[in-house]
Amino acid sequence: MEPSTNEPLSFFDRYAYALKAGIIVILILVLLIPANMIQNLIWERRDRQEEASKEVSSRWGNEQNITGPVLAIPYKSTSGNAASYVYLLPENLKINGELLPEKLQRGIFNVAVYNAKLQLSGAFNRDAIASLNISPSALDWEHASLLIGISDLHGIDNQVQMMWNGKNYLFNPGVVSSDLFNSGIQSPLAIIPGDTSALSGNFSLELGVKGSGRISFSPIGKTTTVAINSSWPNPSFDEAFPPKTRRVDDKGFAASWQVQHLNRSYPQSWEGKKFNIHSADFGIKLFMPAESHQMSMRAVKYAIMIIGLTFFVFYFIELSQRRALHPIQYALIGLALCIFYTLLISISEQINFIMAYIIASVLTIGLIIAYTAAAFKSIRIAAGIGATLTLIYGFIYVIISAEDQALLMGSLGLFIILALIMYFSTTIKWDKLGHKNTTITQ
Image (cartoon, rainbow, N blue to C red):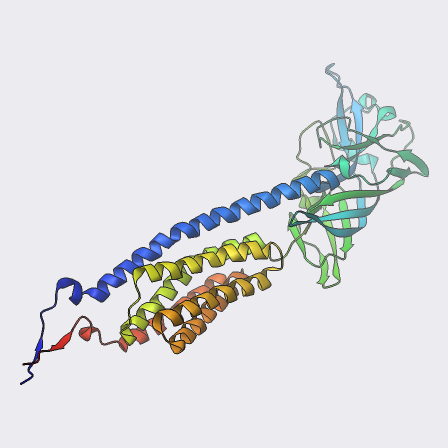
């Protein structure tokens, strides 16, 4: 006689799968510690890149801001105070130029630099000073100076000369006052007080400056027109004003701006340090697309999603196939998922990000497939895990690549994943879990 009886189950036997689920959740939270350490590693590598960029910029030229030309006229007030300056801005200012870009390498890091060839032209209008409450006799026209603000004089690439009313003037380093800017060049411009045509003529000059990262301009003309072209294919137009016209393609870009004096917060003339002349600056940044550290940081933020989904897949395989993985095996798989990010960071510093992502994904998925095949003794299960991880990593790449639509795509993706998990959970006979039938022979 062989009656079948159900042995009484202990608490741990009855709730083994529930306890396993709790352990898996704890492991996921513990694995966030190395994920956070990886984020710190990315910050450290980013800091090293910034140090390399600063080192290259200090030798080549920093970000450049071009302001001017501005006419500075000394005057002495009737109260007997020390001499100050009246500043007169051009009636119109035109800047045409070309940016000749390069990529300089410092170690494993690339820095975008440029050589700007600029042509500045325009004219002044003496009548703009009439609105100031200053006696004409207090103005020292014979000691006037023409100022051009250049943020990093180290980057000046030519001896700057200006044509003013048919006469040639040379510039010297330094500025007569720090009211407008702290760094720049100047040229003495002696004007006969009675010569009304001295400020009605045109000026023109050529300026060559080297810089890195960004170049910007101050719209100091009553009408300021700027036209810049370059072979750099990834510009970023930032600061106060977007271009009026632009063309960006694989061959480079061409952009133009037109800014009126009504668009800014300072007038055509004033005395002393009353206005911030840089409040309406605009310019161009030589954008480095798909910066590896930025993309890696986005990828790490989804570490909990990848680890959690992977562990859920293994857990459901356990429930459906009645095959168990030890918590240590879960931990090893989780560490493999974390090492993916260190691979991604190190490889992306050598090659472009998408290839680094593919290589790191293939190595990680391949390792987990091999480990799964050995743990479950099943090529079929290992292949299913590999296909699932491929979909997950592909989905994560799409999210981190789509900056503007990342939230929408991530939300829809998580919704679909949750729906799939809920569906597969309905195929598991939860009421049978923890039951163990034994047979007694008599």
